[in-house]
Image 1 (cartoon, helix red, strand yellow):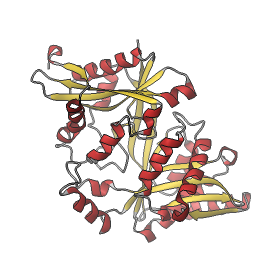
Image 2 (cartoon, rainbow, N blue to C red):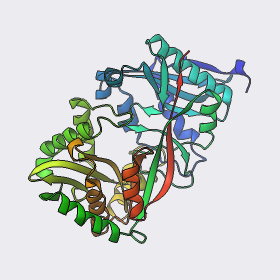
Image 3 (tube, rainbow, N blue to C red):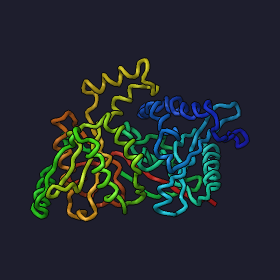
Image 4 (cartoon, one colour):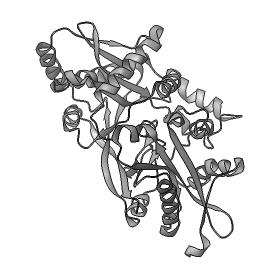
Length: 380
């Protein structure tokens, strides 16, 4: 496709937004492992009036078209106000990237998002983030032959080449670990857990109390923001963002797979594992609940179609870090899964720099299932 046949335009109309949202559902028809997100969820994420992210953030959508007017790619330029408030590093973000296998189209999309970010006074672009690292984020770079877990991205293998061709470098590598009950090795972890309890007397582990859900959610938020403060890329959630997330998670969470670790009655750590709804969403091929999608979704959810969980969040208060408390949470998740109908768990994503957690996960027999990465380049 020659450069003259590519045009990239900002999305400014309702019809343009619809084309932006619709593009992946046609684009991924030949990719059996892509799991279509519900269209209503995508619309909510992009709605600047309904998504709490946009209380401090901004977004501009772009569509790439060929000479016939057909959509061949999309991207969003994103300003994350909370990121800039914390880091003051001039970094903007890009996300919602989809593109045919054509370097010219990709370059035009990156340039459009980059130009918009420069107009916002920013000096670098990082992504993909959809729209933040607290949402679906990262590029899949290895592990294309199986479905992604809930809230994890999927993309064609050639995307990384498009990124590198246009000057992007890895900012961080992230891993998805997978462990199945048939292969789990808990003896070493159990011995380690006993040692942790002897070294820190007064520890008690419990599951989520749904009758006090709002209070429990606030406790988890407080631990999360403290625990993750110094982690790469962490941006604290605002109260409104967390309220929105808690509302969404309440609809799908299994309280038996959420753990709070207390020390002498004070919560000091937590982990959340979510039923892998992608095992049901895979059968809602066009992302629409009505008229056929909802019955399929409910059928797979209710009759054993969901037998995996994903652990997306774990946190230990800074003053308790270095005591291996995360091993207690990992062990509890592995042991509580099978009695509640879950045969396997994906732990993702795990930062490449978090060697302590990686060692704990690998010690139970978990293996790398997928590799993800965040990319960045300067705006010049």
